[in-house]
Amino acid sequence: MKDEIKRIALMEGASKVGIASAGSFAGAPKGHAPADFIPDAKSVISFGVELLDAAVERDRLFLNSQMIPEELRIPVQEYIYNTVAYSMVNTRLDQIGLSIALFLEKQGYSSMCFPATYDEQYEPFMSNIPNFQAPFSHRHAAVRAGLGEFGLSNLVLTPEYGPRIRFNSVITSMQLEPDPIIKEKLCIRGCTLCMKACASCAYNSSINILTPKENLNWNEIWLDPPSVTDKHVCNSGRCAGGCVRACPVGSKRTHRRQKKEKS
Image 1: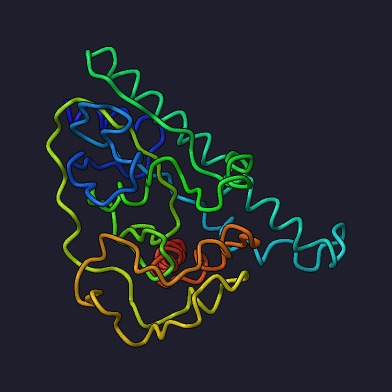
Image 2: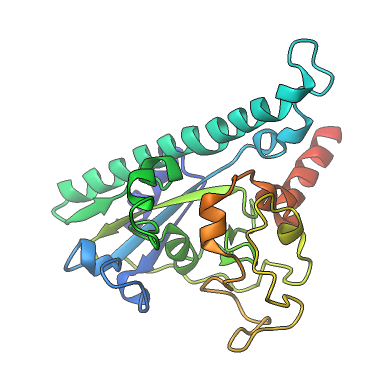
């Protein structure tokens, strides 16, 4: 059954899919653990859809355009990025989640899928609940399902795509064998390129990132965020995707593809 679930996810357009035990979410905020959605939750299925490199690296779009004036070039770039790298990917994530959940329901297992998290969808709630976050953390699920690890940016980095991927999850009462977490750390830790590229300055300047924090082992896989970002600034600021674009783990894929195209 595990293979069939993964086959469905990949067939529906997922780039990666993994399984986590519902019991591995100890420490989740009260009311937001797997069992809070499915009382007899056994497994969490995590899946991601990669982002197109051309959309992530949008700053090269429309240079010297004959139609778009220079003062409008950046707004048009951001429109394309927000549509191609967020809205369209979120639609795919929604479809994958619903397909998996419906399949599991037909097998007799209670299942819950989620709308892909995006600020526009949650704006009515976020404005009235200061500490509101996503109903369920798809990033934590992705790490626990072996798809990647948290980086300094609090984004999940994967071996194939770096942070150039978005995630969603399905919680189910079906017992599935969990996938192992990744064995090698991906975040370069001290490079700080994601911090320097943040347009909203959402990184906590009071933290000396070059000095390992207490209870944060820089030699281990990060299963939880290193928490060097200010989520309030990040949520209220302009999300330009600079941290995604700057991460060298993600840009390695671009270099590999370009090298292959030239060969």
